[in-house]
Amino acid sequence: MSSFPLRVFSGIKPSGDLHLGNYLGAIKRFVPLQKTHACIYCVVDLHAITVWQDPADLKRATYEVAAAYLAAGVDPKSHIIFNQSQVIEHSELAWIFNCVARMGWMQRMTQFKDKAGKNSQNVSLGLFAYPSLMAADILLYKSTHVPVGEDQKQHLELTRDIAQKFNNDFATSIKDNAYDADFFPLSEPVITGPATKVLSLRDGTKKMSKSEASSMATIYMLDDADAIAKKIKKAKSDPEPLPSETDGLKDRPEAANLVGIYASLADMSQQQVLDQFGGKGFGTFKPALAELAVESLSPIASEMRRYLAEPDIIEEILKDGANRAGDIAKNTMREVRNIVGFVG
Image (cartoon, rainbow, N blue to C red; front, side, top):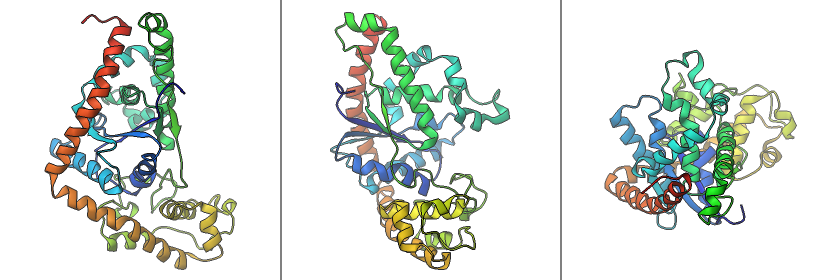
């Protein structure tokens, strides 16, 4: 790993409205990484179409993800923001990795099993091969670190397996072409913060999702202040006061979720939140959380709306980012083709 410059890659699918889980689990953590790493943040539109997307909705959602990156504080001049489909090398490297990865590896991916369920024979091949494309996204830029949620950690482990197998399978060619023995890095996960997995406001055992039946279960990044406050104040809780220690949150999923959200928004640990609110009921805690959420999220929503009102600006940023990402990608693929033995 030491021979590779520190580089972060991560991306979000433009497959629907962004919500609090996307922000706390990913986007909020993108910003501080800019201080220590070269960062590449992608709108992964190729991943989005593993399930059907209305083309007009896909375009709208692509703009929304890019606007969220910008509004949260990602600097598109010092770092890179782009949408995946503009850099064709993602697809090319994904095919090579399809030929490196083993069927058994792919069949073990729990997220595919969860999404496909009993319908596994009728879902797209793309949904099954999704982790191979994710590996290509990361390794195309020889990324050393990847901020991921718990649900993506298995896919990053697969990325490391693919990188290791490629390095081993083509060791002789790598040496003959005078490349380092570790051609691809074994990328490390970055899993930080107290709310890396944000749960539903109506059911603390389920992940927050845009597919929730109740509109009160999910806080969207473009919600206004009134909607944010209302959803938090009506969030499911329990009759007990908050505990003084984090151990007291066990078997209290809704309480743990709300404490985690507060901690992540305030850049505190869960214990620090309980030091402040332990022994107090939700009648005190929820209004405080609602105020914090409005204070934290409303400026981002406002900035997102400003960008979305000027799509030409977003398009220019994505185009510039794709050109700069493409320069890195083309160089990697030139080396990969050489190593694999392709002519031309």
